[in-house]
Image 1 (tube, rainbow, N blue to C red):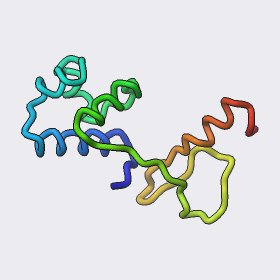
Image 2 (image 1 turned 180 degrees about the vertical axis):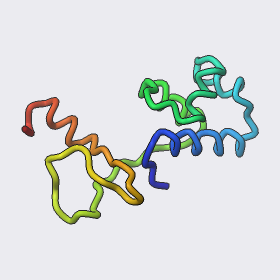
Image 3 (image 1 turned 60 degrees about the horizontal axis):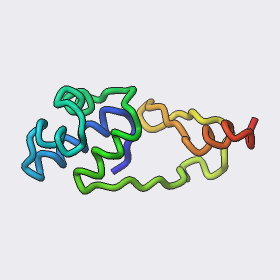
Length: 104
């Protein structure tokens, strides 16, 4: 599944939690967060701590695969581009390379 925004991440987490027969409190206990944090994530919290998000994904036996976006056919130096249906895509690789001083 292609993740385009925080709501997509929340939807995947909620669906997998339900598939596994877990309630929000059980997942929160596995991750070491409050039930309210799980509620917020499932509703698309836009500023979630990445470490906790990865821990949540791992607790649900899910994985993340990051692959280059080949839609444009050429590399870009802009970390933000227009995606399908007006969504905004953010290229984390470009952001990291800029932070390391390898891109302008």
